[in-house]
Amino acid sequence: MGLLKRLLAITSAGALTLTGTLISAQSATAQGQGAAPVRIVEPLPVPVTDSTNPAYHAFQALLCTSGCQVAGPEPDPTTAVHVPAGSRMVIEYISAHCSSPATSTISIVRVDTRVGGVLRSHLPGPPEFRVVSSDSGGDTKVYTFGQMVRIYADPDTDVTASVDGVGLGLACSLSLSGHTVALQ
Image (cartoon, rainbow, N blue to C red):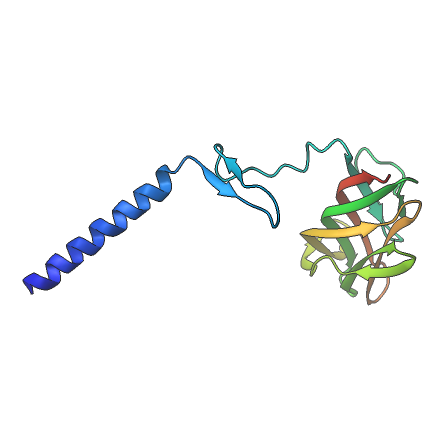
C-alpha cells in the first residue's frame, strides 16, 4: 500500500510540473513547409481577427418572404438583398421570425444564393414554434430560429428567401448578418 501511495505522489508531482511548464511558456515556434521558423512571443494563443481586415465590410439586412409584415423601423420589407458588383457576400448569421395561422404549418425556411452561376437553396435552421392567441380569437403559430452559417453569394446577384409548409398565410422575416469582401 505504501508503494502505491509513493507512485501516486510521484505521478501527481510530475503531472503538476508538466502542467506548470506548459502554462508558463511565454513563446512558441511555428514553421511552415519550406519556410524559416517564426518565434511567437505573446499573446498565446494567437488571436485571429477577420473583422479588422480592411477588405471586409460588415452588413445587416432584413429579408422577407411573401406575406411578411414587419413592425419596426423598416416600413417596406424587402424580398431580395442585392450583392453589390465587385463584392462577394458572406452571410454569417441568420435569425428568423415566422408566423402562420393555427391551421397552417411551416416546415422549411430557405435562403437562396447564387455562386459560380449556380443557384442553391440553404436551410439555415429548424424552425421551432409556439401558439399565440390573439384578441380577435384567432390563434397564430409563431416560429423562431437563429443559426450561425457561412453562406456565400456572388457579386451582382440577389439573396432571396422562401417558406414551405402546409396551408395558407405562411410568412417569415429574416435578419442576415455578415460581411462583403471586395474582389480584386
